[in-house]
Image 1: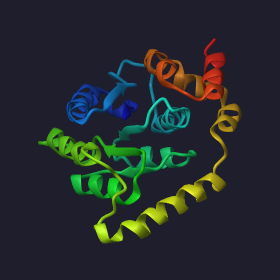
Image 2: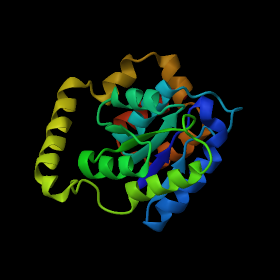
Image 3: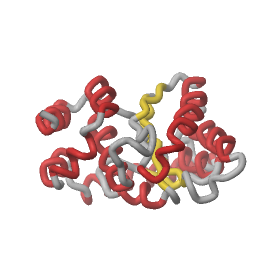
Length: 211
């Protein structure tokens, strides 16, 4: 599985800590991590709304299978991500959240609070959360006897999102183009997105905008 990490502006200084923690856990289980930044507070700013847009581009294009993101509380990033099609984002505060989100909801995006409650031992909490998210199959149900109805509800939710959300390419065409350009016009996006994305229409649209 290819995991993308996206940090927003207020928590950019923690990117290295988060990336190293995520990478150490993910690689144990055969996953890879692409770090889309922000790498530090001096980079071109990414807001939590841009995090949502970037996460949606990566997931809809096939450039990533899972996105790890967040903001100060995690709530803004979660709301922004869930406003886009084919993104199912959960707010993860502790390892039990991570485990149950993975097993019950089987989402493809996790938003973390990187300021609120991020004190002594925060890197350990992150490590344990990543372990519970990425150490095995997801969508197995919790408790296990609830697996069938939970899997059925997940399929229903996916179907609802197909109806209630506009296709990603249409969003890219309709959204403020300067906002979109500010979101993708960064070296990390160009490096990882074009190497991994699979949807040719989304690839071409982004490529034309970046010319």
